Length: 173
Image 1: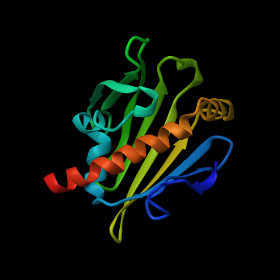
Image 2: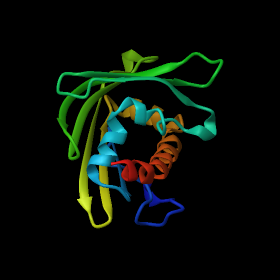
Image 3: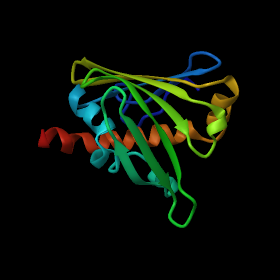
């Protein structure tokens, strides 16, 4: 996890993942879409269901609820058919449509690990949007566990799926 760029689309759109500290992971990716389109894809349940879950692992987003406003909550339930589903949930702390999103996150199967804080910044750049997402974990051990679980691969794949969806969303906008 050294900030490498593994994307088949080349350096302009690949996902960069960097461990910034013992507790913080930073991901960066440029999408060929406007900031508001990327923001909407990351906050609207009907759109999240179309890309958020690594398909190659057979994982699907079973249900998705999001009240995207300061103080509003979300809950994303995911899993493989026939297995016990899991969920992430939290509360929105800051919402600036098309620009910034800050929210807490709890992995419900392991509530004792604590609450993380996700900060997503959507920056307009030539030809699209630069997403910079900071994920601050409750402890070094929780981040170590997330990395060991293969979450980086899943994040990269889901962001590729988002990239594939964005042209259709841009046309509809």
